[in-house]
Image 1 (tube, protein in one colour):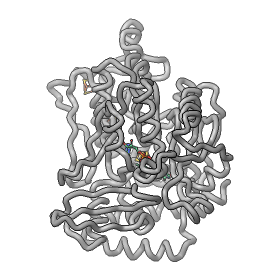
Image 2 (cartoon, helix red, strand yellow; image 1 turned 90 degrees about the horizontal axis):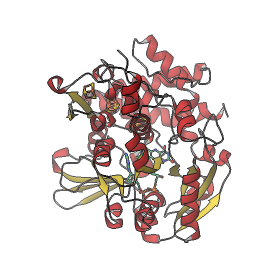
Image 3 (tube, protein in one colour; image 1 turned 30 degrees about the horizontal axis):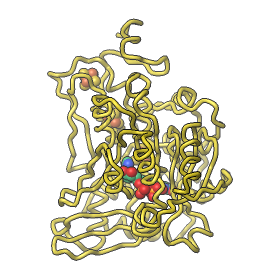
Length: 450
Ligand SMILES: Cc1cc2nc3c(=O)[nH]c(=O)nc-3n(C[C@H](O)[C@H](O)[C@H](O)COP(=O)(O)OP(=O)(O)OC[C@H]3O[C@@H](n4cnc5c(N)ncnc54)[C@H](O)[C@@H]3O)c2cc1C
Ligand code: SF4
Ligand code: SF4
Ligand code: SF4
């Protein structure tokens, strides 16, 4: 059953997003297309959805309390797990930006970092996200920012929250390479008047933009969308794998920290005994860890947060890798608003900012270009295996090559190996062989298609 025109008007529903009564997110979870963004939880008008941390899969899963559900269809409509039409959302939110097959709609590309060395050093990359949020709060541009931090309480469970002071923003610096239920705090934005910034990986922003299509309130209150690049997300089992790979027991770990303290940082484990053990970035973020990606990540085509006002990543460029030990960000502006914010930061000398060419952004992200260039092979293989895949609306992808199919098969095979702890050793050996062989490199696939 569809909403009447009056009901559509009442909930501020845009033409671009249909809310159909009778649909809910149960099928998304059943089809393994949920990536735990939690947009559904915040948008449910009857608070019928609870968040469950599934210990077996190491993922967040929303659970509907059927007695509270009115079958309104809103959770399904805003869910980016089963469908995401980035081209339509671009028209809605980023009109006037240059359309680019590889980077998404954009205005300009930059390199830069926080001029405050402390922020630059503490941040995941060049501290740009933290600096932007601190400036936005202190200048009165926003009243709060949706961010996340890893508490040092031993739970090893990320806590998304609304930071309302620069000090609170500072506690959220650094990337978290584990599931983050960021959009669970979108509810606080809906409940508390004010202007907000949000930070998220691409799928978080997919959920937020879809939610903004049906909630006028949200669309008005979120004035700045900061997106992180994302190669892939990994489950909590992936975190256990890294701890196991370091020869440690999960029970002796007090807390973990990713990235930060110089570039590119790495993974630091603090034991209950007080001892800290650090693993460098390349040792930590190797192909065997990527085997712990979420199923939905296999069908994700957005590497650079294409629905953000400004997207942020690492400058993996030869000259930066050779000389920089503190951190340099890549940035892509996609809206006038995003462009204005960066300009203000530059004029206030809070950041160093220099324009760079689009090609250099692609060059720096060569290891992840396969996300978009080879997605057709992953989708086709999934369909052959009888798996459900998302609906991408008007978006089309390049035709797959045999190499793409081979790489997709390798990824599926590694994911199967990652699901059983008793055979993790096989995963480590196969990853070493693949890394050494080099020719199975996903960047090889992508580079050939530039
Ligand atoms: C899962 C993941 C994959 C990534 N993959 C790539 C990649 O392939 N290539 C690349 O160049 N860069 C990638 N990045 C981005 C990179 O790690 C940095 O986050 C980015 O360059 C910003 O750095 P910064 O120093 O400006 O951020 P900081 O100043 O350190 O601030 C980081 C901000 O991000 C928020 N945040 C951290 N982790 C998450 C999360 N998981 N979900 C939502 N919000 C979060 C924090 O709340 C904080 O506000 C990835 C990040 C993540 C989280
Ligand atoms: S009430 Fe609506 S939004 Fe909430 S679970 Fe039911 S269908 Fe979903
Ligand atoms: S909105 Fe997010 S958390 Fe909810 S079902 Fe969809 S993907 Fe999962
Ligand atoms: S690869 Fe896509 S779906 Fe997976 S965590 Fe990153 S943004 Fe989300």
